[in-house]
Length: 116
Image (cartoon, rainbow, N blue to C red; front, side):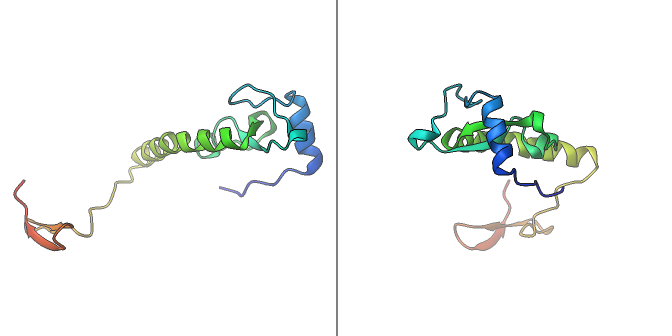
């Protein structure tokens, strides 16, 4: 995936004005003149859609953006798992499991016979 290009000051201003200065996540007005911080946010996460175009960008409060990003992590992980399954990529066996019936017991810090 290519690295996202930073928006210029004029592009950020244009984006803010096009959307009326409203946070697209919480729907409230962003007030930068009162010190409220805002960021350019992707409506659909880059890791999900891969789109880094103008139609996918919106202004959002920094706090709202962080919350949405934290929620997107699970969706992104699921998309990555589905993509890997579609491509036939399997999760490797754990380096700590052995074929002789022993598993690593983290609490005791040693291998023990697997009773399961």
